[in-house]
View 1 (cartoon, helix red, strand yellow):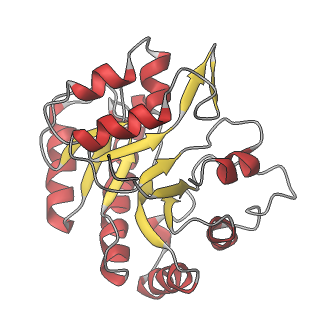
View 2: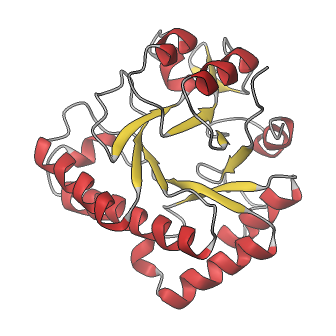
Length: 244
């Protein structure tokens, strides 16, 4: 019998059309996650930007999480992958990822037991010097970077593999088979699915949730599994349905 992993709700990619329970901003989204019954949350680094938060603001954010009884599973930062490859956006993208790593580390220090993980997707042609800077920056603050791009690149700590089933299925991969072949323990694992040409509620595509949880547990993963509602039609209902 495999242990059931806790589930964390990602606040990245939430639609803002007006009227949603998270529409007021990051703190409202945190309160909504807690109201849904989650005990872990994955913050959206695009909404809580490290460069815009001084130490007081970071302590206040940690206090909000603590009041709501939430632990931090990490931060999501889904940049356009090509921004790290070359051009004017490269420096800003690198700074954003390093800032997210530093913020994750500081928040985890204020919330003992939390994870210091930044989740992203790196382009296959990301230059070696950029990867070296990412590794050095993460090492400096004690964070890890989970790369959810597929096919997975060889892990070089503190940059390692993150699992996004929807991305694997979209690439015509077999989630269970691919995860079982990984040479290292995944740094992050998401709960997502894909059917046709779009993301769907986990379990409504080809993902066998129980088998997926079993295989990532077998690979040594013990952290919270991140519920990913990006691109889903009814995100509020999906979040509650996948709470576990």
